Image (cartoon, rainbow, N blue to C red; front, top):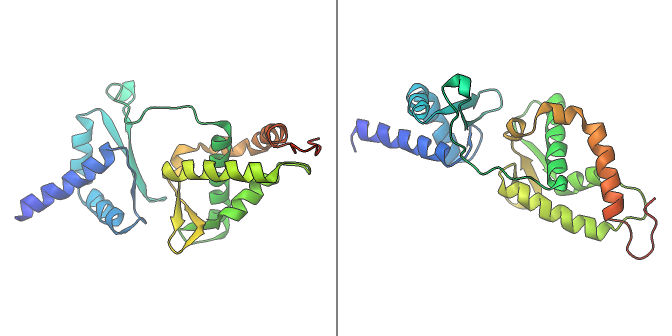
Length: 208
């Protein structure tokens, strides 16, 4: 393969990855790191190709991720949507806000890039919203299902060799607005009411 062919193949790999709606991560696996290096090397060419499709490349060098969004009208026309927008269940939305808050807390106290936490710690954070008399088993089952949805969305990654530990992806900062984290107290009270109603002890335990 000639150098030109190799360069074109690298560029194609980056464009295809982005157009699939997939994030490119600076601190991801070996493939992700290779794509990030190519993206940074061919940044102008990648941006030019995407602008023809009315798509804007977003690169966050601080957090270490890149993704696409459609251009706004003032940027040259409304670009296409790469993914279908769906309304997330309240529990999943709240869990995303919780994970974003945990990532912010981690960044304020630790200098490393990877935020790894146990699923038990995450679940305990959720349980803080509850009072005695709730159906813990039912709540934990639904928590595991919600956590799987968030994993499938790419916001957490199980740690190899320890499935009870997950890494919170920094792309969550692009998805969960900081304003939502700022309203955490209100979100917590809403969740507390929702959880007490949903997880009240089915065998007579009080949910008050």
